[in-house]
Image 1 (tube, rainbow, N blue to C red):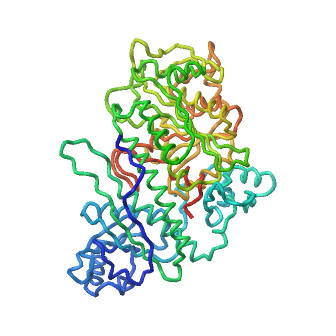
Image 2: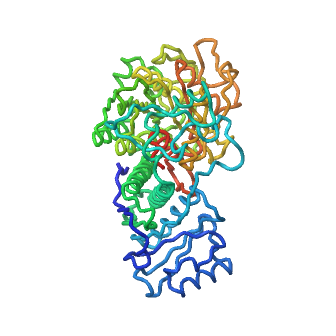
Image 3: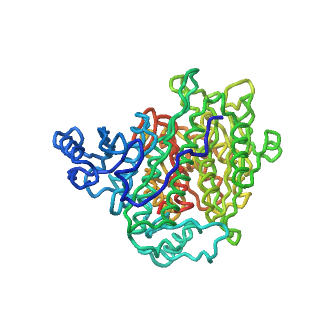
Amino acid sequence: MRADYTTNTKISVTESGGWASAEADALLFFTTEGEDPGSLPDLPAELRAELDRLKRTGRFKGGAGEVTVLPAYGRLAAPYVIAAGLGAAPAGRDTLRLAAVQAAREAQRLGLGRLAVLLPEGAFPAEPPRGGTYAAPLAAQGAGGAGAAGGASVKSASASGDGVQAEPQGESGADARTAAEARPASQSASAADAEPAGATSSATTVFTVAEGLLLGAYRIATYAREAKPRQELAAAQLFVQRDALNGEALQAAVAAAEAYAVATNYARDLTNLPGNLLLPSDLAEEAEKLAGQFGIACEVLDEQAIVERGMGALAAVGLGSANPPRMITLSYDGDPSSGEVLGLVGKGVTFDTGGISIKPAGGMEEMISDMGGAAVLLGLLIVVGRLKPRINLRIVIPAAENMPSGTAMRPGDVITTLSGRTVEVLNTDAEGRLILADGVTYAIEKGATRLIDIATLTGAVLVSFADVATSAQTNDDAFLASVLQASIQAGEKVWQLPNFPEYREMLRSTVADIKNAAAHKWAGAIMGGSFIEAFIEDKPWIHLDTGGTAWLWGDRGVDPKGGTGAMVRTLAEYICGAGV
């Protein structure tokens, strides 16, 4: 296995007075378009003049994500200076994160492992996606989600407090109560709300830059005989203004940023593993290893137990493979006094050929990423293990390999799921929804009172959103509003699809309770979610389809080529609210 849930990068925070004299491989600072280089008096006049010339000639404008590297010519202790662009002022949090990502990538490319980073002053607000507004009510951006009221904090399982949550502003009556109930207990009012505004914005800046540097330092594992070892960013010293130097708050921000970024990079590693190196049994072993690391309960059912428990959908999907399925459950009780349990169910198809309804050969190698939902939830386990939010979780991962063979599930088969419902199989390549059906039922059996499933479920989601956004469906808009707010804080694009009852009608079967695909090709992404909804037993539910976002064919923004770890940070923010 080449998936790592640690980082060797040392991130520290100190007062900004010593930035220019720091012993480092490079000094890093952030600049907006049109900003006068004279605002950096700590830099030698020659360097400020060179930056001014680059800006005037258009070779470096300070645009969002733009990076330039200048030699210091012996004028500084550090041999290089890196300028990272923030675009037009005022910049938002996503822009700052992107600048840090791009700076880390450029530093690694040049072998600059130790950075001294001058943090920009001012607030960097979250940036809602451009081009429209969310369909689910965001209630004046206060309907939940981490940081909805200026920053929520992580509370350990042993933290005191009754978990009473203030009603969000902009809501009243039942709507406010529903939205408040949609939030995890870890996002209740906290000491962070009472901190001075300067301290809060500095913690946000520290978190965002630290997270961006670690995300940008990610490098995909290679298996070439003479492959160079993956280089890490060795150290990043973050320099903040003296009046904002709140040691405890800033160290907490660094710890949270490390947890979010390490979890995302770990999910990327898992997603990038070749199919022959990540079988269902390997995924189960990885879950057991992580659970042992963080003291979290883990249960793994093998193929015999799966059949004995009546998990006919998961068993059927695994029939065609020589590598049998597993059902993985991880239980975390961070708030034993609460009866609320969030069930998280992730698709773990370690390789998907489509089965008898086999896929075209072109691009099939990308199907190593079909366990992207499972990767996200195992990554999330790292955040939970490190930050210990006050919430109860049941993480369920049905894992299988979908292969064609003489024993494989066939089109036309009728299978009986764990819920007792029967399914007519029209398409064996619609296998993800089958294993998720047993997964959500098992999560409910384990006590889940609300559900989020995440899966690389459909190619059809690419028709709607390309590889830009994750789609969401729900039966509870207030619940989804909380997750959407978390996605804004995390800088990940999520967009709601409709969930009209007519879609479920299209999945009616004449020989079973439901069929796993419609007789037509329309609304494929919605159909996948509608099928899963048939098994949720009227629990509040969200379906996230990362079929477009879990894998990219080239770097884009903060996301690298290959596995992206999409939605790790959104779910971490929803559960922990640590992104201040």
